[in-house]
Image (cartoon, rainbow over all chains, first blue to last red; front, side, top):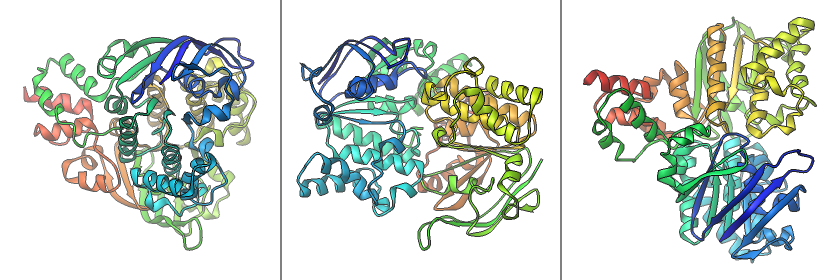
Length: 276
Length: 270
C-alpha cells in the first residue's frame, strides 16, 4: 500500500508547485490510472510516489509519502528502490546502457538488487515470455526500435517483481498487440498483490486495466472513482482527456439520433477491439 | 512538389544482422497523405529515414523527384524533406523555443522578416507562440514533441515526415497534430506519418501502408486495409482494426474504419 497525504511539490527553481495538496491511496493488488491534460502533474506524481522527488531531483515537498502506513521521509533512495519501481516515459532514459543484449538488460535490475542468480534467471525468462519478446533476447538494446526498447524496459521492471510499480506512459510507443501484452502483465502483477499506478493517454487501455482512475488538473486531484464511471464522466472532456472509444461511439450515435441498442450489442463483445 | 520513389529498398544495420527493410517498392505521389503502420521493429522508422538521406540504402534506390537520393547531399535533401523524430530529445538542442525553431530555416538561408514569419507561423501551428522565450527543457515531454514538429514545419519543406507524432499527446495535442497535417495537405505538401494510433490513421490519411518484417504487406485506403478480409494480415503484424471497423463488421455494414463512417451507415440504414 502506498499513500500520499496532502502532498505538494515544487521543482527546484520553479516558481509554482506542480502538485498541490494531493492525497491518494494505492491499495495492495490495485491498479490505479491517472489521467489529465499535458503538464497537469501526472509525471510529477510518478516521481513523487517513487520517492525520486525530492530525493534525487531536489525541489520542495510538503505532506507525506507512506509505504504500508510508515512515513518514508527518512529513507534514502536506495532503500525506496527496493519497495517502489518506476518506469519512465522515455525508454531511452530507462535502459541501463551497459547491457549488450536485451536479455542482460532485463536481468540487470534484479541482479542489482542482489537476488540469487537462479531466481534472476527465472524472473528474466518469465518476463521475456510475458511480453512475447524472445526474438529480441540476443539483440543489442541500442539497435532496437523505439517500441522494442520500451518492451525491454517494461520486462526489466517486471523482473524486479516490485510490490509497488509506477508506470509513466508505459505503452506510448507500443503496437496494439504489445500494448495488450503489457496490460495483461499489469493485471497479473496486481493479481499477485502488487500495487500499480499507471499514467496513460490511451484511455481505452486504462478502461481495460484499472480498478480506479483519478484525474489531475493544474496539479490538483479533481476526479477520483471506479474506472468505468470516471472514464465515462463527461467532465473528463473539460480536463483535456479523450473519451474511451466505446463511450465516444455511444455519444456520437445518440447525437445522430441512432437508438442505443443499434450498437450496444456489437459493443458488448470486446474481442479483438483495438487498444490503441 | 516532388514524387518519392523507393525501388527494391533494402537496409541492413550490421553485417549479417536483421534486414530492417527487406525489398520495398513504394511510390508516394506529391500531395498524398500516407500513414505507415506495423508492429514494433517492422522497419517503419528505418524506411522513412532513407527519404531525407539520414540512412543510405544497403540495396535498391530512393528517388526524389527522379533524382537518386544517394547522389544528393543531405543539405539538399533537407530542403525537400523534413523529418520529425519519434523522440524529440534527439532533435532539440537550443536554449530557447524560438532559437530551436529558427535553426532549420536559418540553415536553409532564411533571414530577416521571412525567417521571422516562418518561425511565428510554425509556433502558432503547434500552439507554442506564447513560449518563444522558454527553455525547451522547461516544457513537458508532450510540448517538447510539438516543438520538434514546429522546428521542421518552419523549414516549409514540400514533404513532411512524422514519426509517431501523437504519442504522449493529450486530446488537444492530438488535435493540434491533426490540424498541422490538414494545413500541410491543403498547401499541397506530402505528409507521411508513422503511427500505432489506428483512430488517428483511419481518420486522417487517404492511404495506409502496412509493414511486417521489413516488407509491405498491405497498401490501400483505410476502408481497404481495415476491412474484414485483411484482419488476419493485420494480426500477423500485431495490429488490430479500429473499433468502428469491428462494430461495422459485426452489424453487417461493410468496412467502416472511422466513427463518422460507422454512424453514417447506421443512420442511412435507419
